[in-house]
Image 1 (cartoon, helix red, strand yellow):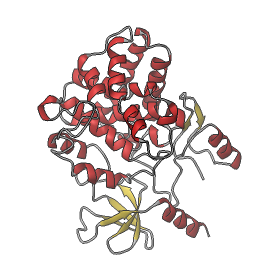
Image 2: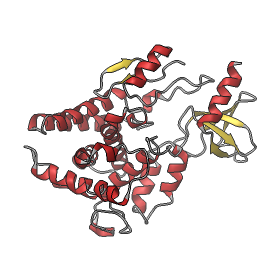
Image 3: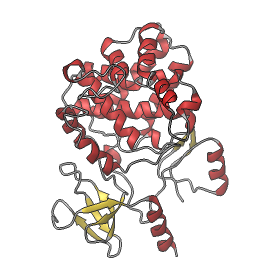
Image 4: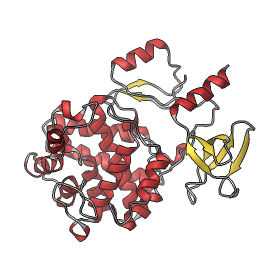
Length: 347
């Protein structure tokens, strides 16, 4: 196995770079350091993403280290300014046309998941906000709220955060305190007071358009567009990331579920913007087609995200599903089927 993307420690230090062959010793060392997964080159060599369209790891790692430093150094004004610079750098990449594909939280260690997830939510929130033509000053507020939305989880006991099974009712009540805890930290506990809009994102990111969320059960006009953008980004990233207590949903499944949430969990205009910002079938995804064949996604179609270009594995034929309307993707292959494909090819 050869690394497709660099592997970083929970502190943002480079451990292994792209192209490194994964030996048994490397794998053992990564496991010992708590790394949950790495991204490797696929069995058919077709998983190279369109690099000029993807948010860079360097910018995301910079944001990861800045939020860790902010929390662990008592949230000083100096560390706050570094946070703002990190958000500005993400905005710069989004404005240049880059989009978040995959994320740090897919491959983060246990002890850095909350921070990595926060960076991913920040990046996707900014991308959705840009799609909705929000001004740069508002994107900064949105990015800061996204980066700090789970700040309250730093006050939740680690045994609840990393529990490998369903939470009890009592534990669930404790977990649901994190938006208010984070809001109180942001408003009262550090030197540089957070902007009101960003602080409200921390408080409201689990509220829902139909009033079914928490902690206050707000609905409709009681919630801002920024609250709803961050809430959707948070839900999507959580759904598409493996955790100790459950397997992730495939990107395509999470995409379809959230598209169906318009005007229920989230306003329809936010959902429509989200649909233009994510790739339900990233390059390198293995899928089953409607005719029973297996294929690998080789290129995305931004105008028709559910109809990418695929390579049929049995024939090496490339098919653009935006032009061939008789064939559709039936499902994304589970990891165990991909492993069988790799073993078949190698033997």
